[in-house]
Amino acid sequence: MLVVKDLVKTFPVRSGFGFSGPVQTVKALDGISFEVARGEALGLVGESGCGKSTSARTVLRLTEPDGGAALIDGADLFQATGPDLRRLRRRLQIVFQDPYASLNPRRRIGDTLAEPMKVHGIGTPKEWPGRVRELLAEVGLPAEAVHKYPHEFSGGQRQRIGIARALSVGPELLFLDEPVSALDVSVQAQVLVLLNRLKQTRNLASVFISHDLGVVRYFCQRVAVMYLGRIVETAPAEDLLDTPLHPYTQALRAATPTPDPNHKVTMARLTGDPASPLNPPSGCHFNPRCPHVMERCRVEVPALQEVAPGRKVACHLMDGA
Ligand code: SF4
Image (cartoon, rainbow, N blue to C red; front, side, top):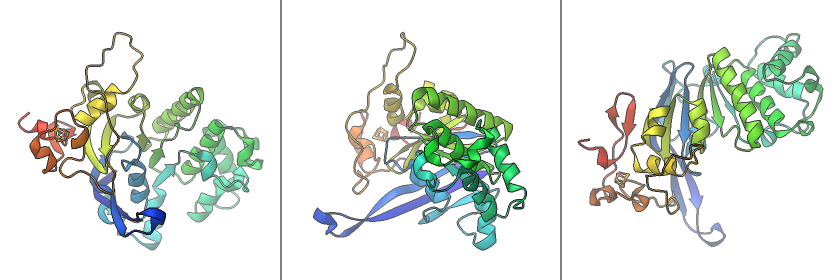
């Protein structure tokens, strides 16, 4: 239902001591493309700063794109204005990592959950209280929560409220931006179970943004791996995690703990930090950290090419593979 094509996002930044230097441009997203089918969960993974969250914010136009298209059943969200834009936006919602920061501390939960329905003209004022109670029950919170404020809830409960708010307008796709990484491990599992149930009962599509491959394996059917603003590998979740092909995915996988004591890590571990997005390496951005780097990797950008059905990799090693 969602097709993102050649998405580009740049940010101006002022460098130098006291930010007095010249304005430079950071290319946070360098032409990324992905698709999500109805009811499908796509994982978007990579290290901090690779552009995962920017992808979500740009598709939703929380920040304006510099290029590309985001098609919802063929209608381009980036070209839409006025009521058309509002209608398309309603179909995509986001759940943020930090539920406390994303909830208004001075607003009761009942008002927080009714607000999106008011904005999008869903139902009538008479219907909103009943709808709010249904949403609370759906995410496992008691009806009394309507009268309370965000500080009266635990982190996990606040994330449930964030999920209920996203659901309040009946979306078809959720961007889940590190939805459990701020929570304790035991609470993470409960919220993941809830999200999985909602995925099935509502046939919700999702883009699950995470740096945790274990969580992604549990939740997603397909995974796209990002590195410095580009997608470097995309594949069905099991294939990507069991037999990663891109050297960066292999290193990410090797860095992920496994519960199997017999599992031996045979792949190279990730060394060094990602290059600065202000001054990314030419050619393949991963080349300074890659154990297989070749001369052409420093000059030629590898294309994201299909190497098997449903599987794409951007690496010169794949040429002729
Ligand atoms: Fe490594 Fe070259 Fe492949 Fe980049 S293109 S991942 S540097 S082998």
